[in-house]
Amino acid sequence: MTLVHPRPVRLLHHDASVRPFIVIWEVTRACQLVCTHCRADAIRSRSPFELSTNEGRQLLDDLAAFGTPKPLVVLTGGDPFERPDLPELVAYGAKLGLSIALSPSVTDRLTRDVLIELYDAGAKAISLSLDGASAQTHDSFRGVDGVFDDTIRAARMVRDVGYRLQINTTVTRSTVHELPQILKTVLELGTTLWSLFFLVPTGRGKLLEPLTAAEEEEVLHWLHDVSALVAIKATEAPHYRRIAIQRADVDELDDVFPVGPLRAQLRRDTAALLTGDEPRRRHPRAPIDVNAGRGFAFVDHVGMVYPSGFLPVAVGSVRDERFTEIYRESELLQALRRPDTFGGKCGTCEFRTICGGSRSHAYATSGDPLAEDPSCAYQPVPGSGSGHRVRNTSER
Ligand code: SF4
Image (cartoon, rainbow, N blue to C red; front, top):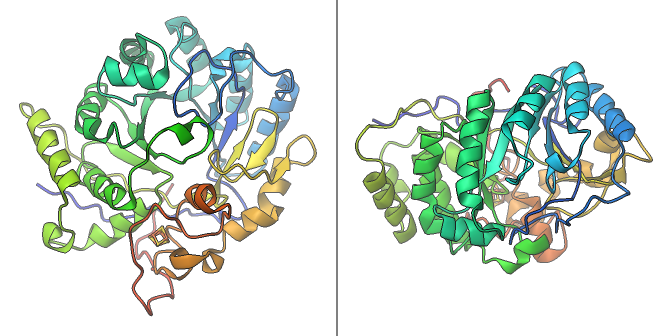
């Protein structure tokens, strides 16, 4: 049975130029792992220049000042569990009415006691990384033996304590064939959201091999195929929203979107692995319409603000200005909200207002955050440049 979501993309109810939907704060860059793809080029010990506890409280005050609906706040790293004041920051943010999620590394610091303490302080969601289907792949990705088994144990503990679990998976040429097996694990763990990150060549990620645009298109279609099993987020691949719209009203999918060799293999492996108990299907959760600087922003460990953690062009510092002012008034963030001015095909694409392309990929490959996104295989239809409209709006 195919379940078609009545709303292919969730639109924000509020104006994304006034208020972000989600803000990621890198509370520290310290981490005990040495992951191959690390965006942050993480270091072993904490920087003395990190935002202090009081500066962190000020930032959370600013985020709460956006009003309702308040932005979701993700505390990431490095490893946020390296900060001893993390429970205090979580409790402070939760008291302000912010929804706080955490993105820890799987190290000895991730214990049941700490998870319970942070849950009681107000955090309700945790994301963990699973980049391979086996210890061999995942451990080599993460640079530490045994971290795969530890991640599976940690994920079970996270669920036991009561958190919503998000699994983050980096998609590379060398691991893409493991996605069906990772999906199986994701389902077994009771994951709420599976976030697949389409590699941006930045930080240590420059050392890994990304998919071609054509391969990425096939993987995004496969993700849409399995989105009735678990909610999917395609990080740095906003054209997943374009695919969701394109597929919404199509009956003979394989005729309209021919299945290439990579997607065919992923389908075969998925069918073979998910035999036995039929996994629970539901209406797919539609992807949400946010993009770098448009509903989304990133604050690094010393308070610099960026459109995204993978777009290293700072637009201000929360040490000099309030976050609310930076978010609303930065020239770059404002430019990122005007897809009509984007370069190349993204500027004329009929999906530009709902997709806009990965600004991080554009910047990483051209040095211009407003250039076209080379990781998308779509060729816009000539003469359809007025912008695609999604008929059905929805809630957050
Ligand atoms: S061409 Fe650009 S705007 Fe159009 S779907 Fe691709 S990435 Fe999105």
